[in-house]
Length: 253
Image 1 (cartoon, rainbow, N blue to C red):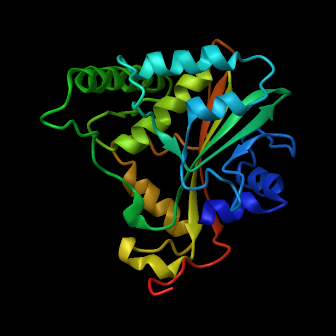
Image 2: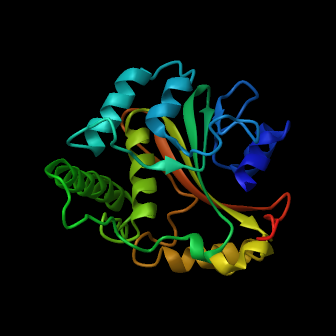
């Protein structure tokens, strides 16, 4: 709800630019974002990158090839039902007139952060097992590359999987030549959903929560650090916050 409220505003580009300030990236009024807002027909579904890339207007990236490259990197077997990670908010951006993308993971409560690894069902199909293994290798590849640049990166399929796949995808897109901003957005002040976990009280609380969440997985200095790659792309992780525009509906509403 909070992301849809944000995306619905006429000044959405200005808001997002404020949230990614000092990243070097900018969002313009003509940049595509998903979801588009409360009236979006797809609002019930968070979007996969393979879907979003088809909507983009990149000048240098071949979206069809990029989508195939992403799927091949992440999945060994690609049945029609296979899903890749879904995102709260995706938006085109630019940096020095070059193509970029903002990947947003939004949380309003401590309990929304997932500490677990990726699970594989005991009766999983052969295809699922192969994909499970491929995903592990994809995250390991990203981990080795980032750890070489900033020692202490320890992302894994088997712990903090949601965080690991976010960082790994940001790394992969940057290696494909995009300027990537991975924004962990704390949504402050939604006290109506406290059963989910402790509501985020303010920016300092959100930074503290993320600091505890990333211990042993990402070095404390990784956020706000830009990583550049040979293909001309880059990535930066940001931890930012914004007060919610309204409270979640009460359970009886």
